[in-house]
Amino acid sequence: IDTYGAYVDIYECLVSAGKIRSKLLVEKVVSVAKYDGRHAEALKALRKAKVLLFYEPHMLSAMLELLPSISAQSISSNFDFMPLLVSSYPDLQPWCVRECSKNEPQFYFKYLSSLMHHEDGNDSAKREKTLVKEWCLMLSSPEKLDLNNVNSSVEAFFHVASKSDESSNFYHRDISFLMDISMRMSQFGLALDLANEILSDSNIRTDKQSMLTVVRHLRTIADVAIRGNNGVLNTALLSQVIAFFNVISPCMIE
Image 1 (cartoon, rainbow, N blue to C red):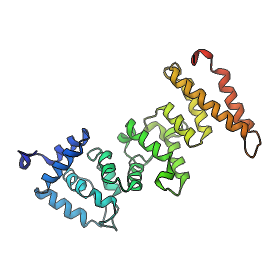
Image 2: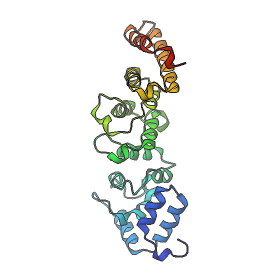
Image 3: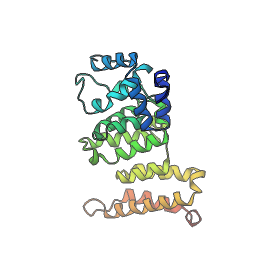
Image 4: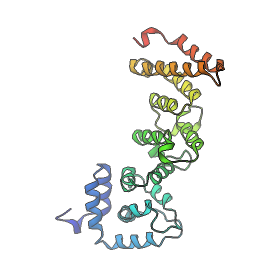
């Protein structure tokens, strides 16, 4: 890049740098792009944007240059860049958005939620294990993001974790991980549904560590059921837990 900067394909270089997650390379290529005419035109268009823009590859370098300003909402306050950022996936990698919005965690959460949305999100992104896990962890910690609507986080998580939700078919589902998150969010009914999935899956059921985790969570749910609400035993929840212990054989966890 330092030697042949004037001859490099800006777009291809940025896509490659994004795939190998190199912040240094991205910054170098964007600095070279400042001498490119198409980059200058894209910058001008983005700064003056008033209506919906459709992503085109030549916009990538300009979007990366403007990302810090976009996340801080210091440019084009009347224009919503989020659809453009989402439509640029996978050319624009989520880690780039996260890096450029470190001081604006709510912006990155909004971006990731748009990218992973059960109806309008990107189907390819929903299949990425690391993205699904990162999003679910964020959904389980709304207080860290100062989110007012906790219910919306729970609803979004159900679209991923609940097998009864048709949207779950479009996501990568690590069932053991999803059960962990369900417990963190105190969604015990969903956790039991996921425990049932684990017991029904021979590949996971034979993994001792996964089964030990299931048993640990079942004991936690049993404790919650015994404490109940205002000291009243939650018999319905407790009976479900007991049913699980009736089918879990000692050999599964020994």
